[in-house]
Length: 123
Image (cartoon, rainbow, N blue to C red; front, side, top):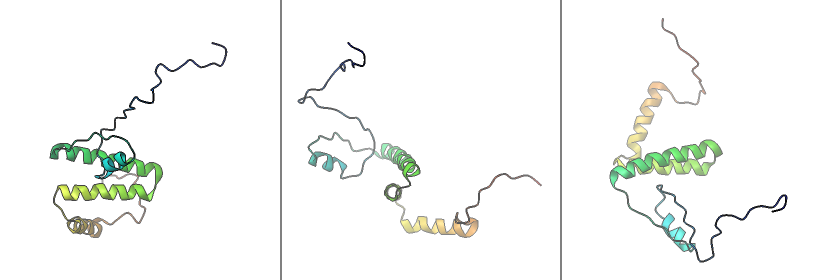
């Protein structure tokens, strides 16, 4: 090969070959339908409760990281959707959690003061 020439890839998929992408993550309920409407195949499974709770925790981490990177309102909405899923899983109402939030706000305040604790000392 001459200077600057690239070697051919080890494998070039033929048009009739399937390209498989592994995701292995919790997705919104309509995502498999959307994938299939776009002419692709979705392989899914329904999780047992313990697996679902672990997947929800991982989804929350994913969505928070995405928000931190983008600061996009769409990511905040995704975080809220995961929180709603946690509420449903634990059979809690939004108002129950809101009451706890309000109580903590009254007792400890919120974050609107932008207070950043640097250090504490005894005495």
